Image (cartoon, rainbow, N blue to C red; front, side):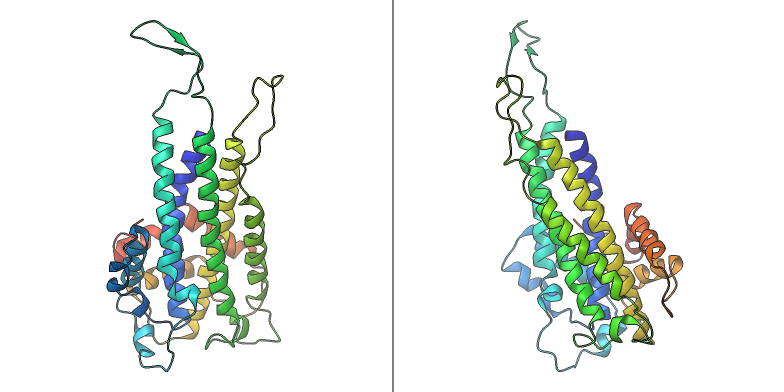
Length: 310
């Protein structure tokens, strides 16, 4: 369970960076405002993750011609899925930090039974093998990762809904004739719904074994495996959001995106062409999901806009 937890935590760090990139791209495509990420907002509610996320969004959208173009629009404020990115993503980052503390302790601990005390030669039977610390933290991580998918899907939903954006319906120039990104939103909705089932805590369950000698177990391996499944589902959801946001940004030309979002858009377009007419989109999703998994999109953005802090 600790091995799965460690690998999942490593990939979750990249996932959280990708989530900030996707959110910044959607903020631009939906012609949102940077005002909600003013550092003074986090200063008076100084959660570490919130502060870091707000800095990331401002950095990613720096010098955005898209945002500058509509700076004087009559919108009062953006929807929660845009305006509260730093609060939602930030809470997941704070959860991740606590999970990492537990996994780090566990990786550097002795979990054998019995234990042989080298200094005295004593052999002591104990319970260091019990996986409860990992079980609880993996259940916590499951929720934190699932929430990144939940809010991503809500941004995606706004991108395809012409009543909530200034973009063509379903992000296609020929709505009605083409479905555009309609089915991709179905896919994302299905994945986040699956995550809600997987996020149910495994650690609240226990089945006795070994003739009731082992009468309380952690189910920590199940929790860790489910965290891994959720992570992979969210990778696909973020890939879909990046595809949709890039499509939306295309429709806003000649206005140019920010430094970081522009770099992300360039990576997406190097792998996937603009959707002119309906085509099978699973290869597109897989291409961007792989760019998230291998961090190539993150590397390209950080090379241009600086480190994305987690």
